Length: 352
Image (cartoon, rainbow, N blue to C red; front, side):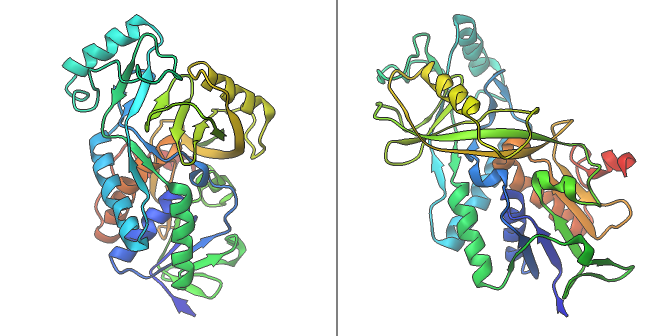
């Protein structure tokens, strides 16, 4: 019987950040994942401290971005590759009132002063972009290349005998008072970081996880565009070789993994509202985000089986949330530190 301190189920951004934490703390573990659809693998990986619809600060934004840079910098060092790309986010204004509101918040709102620039003419030099009223620039932003990071980290774990490529079989899970085992592995705790698939987990299936389908595109265009994210009706993010990420849709009605012509048309039309050049759709993908009714992650132990741990509900901001949620969960597991009430699973114990 192989013995490890932890089993992690799910190698999305949250599970990967947990694995990195355990590596750094020299804790023994094994990762189990079947690489079925995961939202992290197709996510843009944008980190942005501002809610661009309302020009408001993201919850715990400064702490999240600081820790994001540290943790994903650790991935870069471990894997000897670049994953963090720094560039601004430009929000195209729809009318003069939005511009006025932006400038007021950029100069008077204490939480936003460091993040909202007052220059509203940054896109004027790019004739391919329709921004007649101007645009607001968000500072301290960029993206993490999650697609390559997750693939490279999987290879690292596999090469170091830390990865099992399979679907977790709950029939093989044995829970006893002082012993927890899965097949031929004995462990002290199992961390479930399954994303939307947690609804198929018999121990956590009653959590209020809401699946939101998102479809994204990779497009190609010869347009003259800045090295930045441009946000009009949709996000347009630079990749490589004149290719760009576009997305994502937000569908709570058709929660599946099928790509649709309707979503492609919706996204292309959204881009054409501010882009004056033709685009070619190169790829299209769909996945399901795990969101929560109160818009906060869910972390902590099962009320009956304390060795079963939930790490879930990162929603649309997993890149920013995962590093700090992992820190908080680790302190709870190893040092018995309390979890923030806003993210503690105990707020939903009445559902078990």
